[in-house]
Image (cartoon, rainbow, N blue to C red; front, side):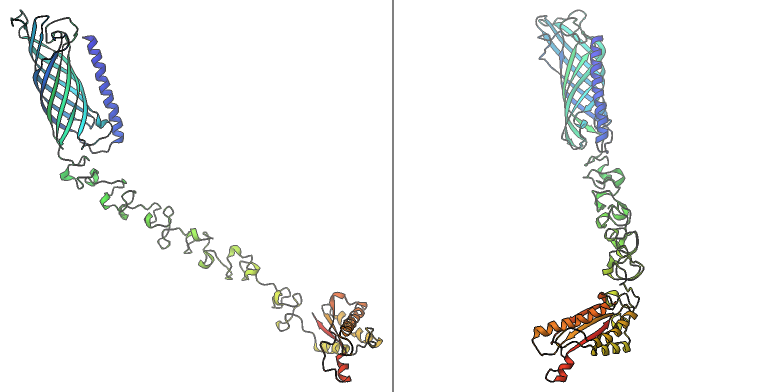
Length: 510
């Protein structure tokens, strides 16, 4: 007995441990909604004795009828407790011992039940569910052992009552008929605590008398219909065919935002009630689906995008996001209003030109004429004279007079002495204003060959230039050109006309 009790105790501990571990895992993975309930299970079946009076020592083909009633409580989808009240008859014959056994038994037991399928996934709509059970009980029985050959009673073995502990365990399958009714097929094997419990016969291969009970029955659950298995009965479930939440009256909420999917415009993304279940990640009052910048707090007029400098240009498009600017300059400021962004303007406080990087055009001499338009950028002069100083009229007249007095040897580029005297006046004028420059032009009439006249005009202009240089005028201020007979003042038909065309012209400039 002691040996058997330890083995059974170990088996019971294993069943309970399995249930607890599976229940713990289940609690972490299953959906909520299951509600505990009582149930009642009547069944009928057949009993079979196992013991020393079996025909082949431990096998008996004879069976008896049995019936039982079970009252249970399902604690969770996996674990349940039940009490079984079992009545049955046992029969057996053994020819070699000339013995026959008949008896009645009644057993009351408490059992732990484990639903195998629900250890992995809870499904209230499952058609077939397998389960195991095990527990401990108290058995009361009355046995009669008689002679097999003639049925004669054996002294002391008629209507003998034996009471003691029993240890039932087994398994079964339930088949769902409707939401509160199952069909059950079950097999249980019941150990007793003694070898003489039924057969009153010690010894043999069987150390403990046993019996089995195979049954069929119906289970009636004290539950109301819950079609979707969410723990809310259909009569109170606004979504009876969809697994839902109690706080939403049984309706589903896939994104767990507290808004039923039927009313949630974004049922797969957690959102806010004020936006009908749609999210506003950056909290700017614009739902993400309509927010061009859903992770940055922005402005409605910019489709939810931020504008740090409040210039009406979204930061993503603003090249100067921290300084208020102009749309035409991509959000950058222009303090001097010259159309060049301050970041690109080398003179941001003075209006300028793009070709000068935002700075104004240069006017070195400050005469109001930009250097690029000023023929004399370092000498102040009126715009009417292209920015150059105006030469006094009397000086121009004097220079023109001197030019008409310049004479050369005939057909040569040799200055006559009288010409040098006149040219000294030009030297004086050039020395008085060192910014002046002089252009010397040589011209001839049409007498002679063109090539000769061209060379002669160039040489005569150069002769004047060389003389002035000899008198201290810098060569950088003097320029000479010869034009031959190409620019006559008048026709060459008369001597007087040819005399006018043979000339040297002097032009002052800056």
